[in-house]
Image (cartoon, rainbow, N blue to C red):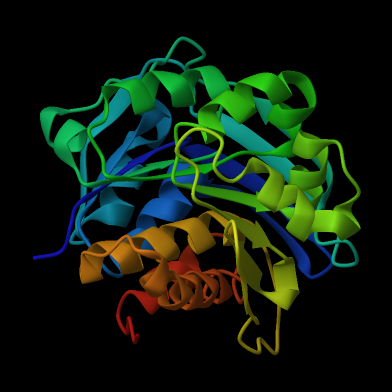
Length: 290
C-alpha cells in the first residue's frame, strides 16, 4: 500500500499563450497539475476551491483516477482565472494576470487528509499554506511558491519553508527568496536547509531538468529529451507531484531515495510539455512507467 498524498493548492481556468500558439479555458492550477502527477504513483486527496462554473469539468476530468475530491470546495464565485504568456528563452512567464475566484477560501483538510503521510502545498498565498500545514500530521511535507508571492511576502514564504521537508523553487524564485544572484543557486539553497525542519531544496531548471540540494550534497537530474515543447504550464507543479508521489509509492522519505524521486519528478514534468494544459499528464496516466 502506498502512502496517501494530500495536495492543497489552486484550481484554475487557464488562458495560455506560448510561441507555439494559444489555448483558452483550460483546467489547471497548482493542485490539479501536482495532483495528476502524484496520482501516477499513489492515491491523492485533492483540496482547493472551484467555482460552480467549472465543478462539472473538474469531476469529469478526474473521474476514474485515484484522486479523491471530497476536500474540494465548490464556490458560487467564478473559478479563479489565470492568464499567462510564456517565454521560451528564459522559461519564465513574460506576463501573468490572475482574476481571483473565491478569495475567502481557506484550506480545511478532511480527516483523511490530516492523517495522510505526505502533504504538498502548491503555489498559493503563504497564509493559506500555513493554515494547511498546521492541520496536517504528515511525515513528509513539500512546499512550492511563486515569484508573485515571494516578491511581496518573502518572510512568510521562508516561515512556510521552515515547516516543510522539501522546498520546490526555480533558481529565479530561490534568488528572490534569499536575495542572492540566480547563478549562486546551490549556495542559496543550502542557506535555507536546516532552518526549521527543511531538509532539501529541489531547484527547478526548466528544460535543463532539476537539482536536489541538501546540507552536504547536490544531485542533478537532466530533463528527458522532448522534441516538441508546446506549453510549460504546470511543469514545476508536476516535478513536485512526481517527486512526492514516488516517495509515497515506495513509502520512503530518506535521502538515499531522493535521487530516484527527483528522476520521477523530472519525468512527470516532461509529460506536461507536449500539449497545452493537462492533456499530456492525463495521457501519461495510461502508461505510468517508472
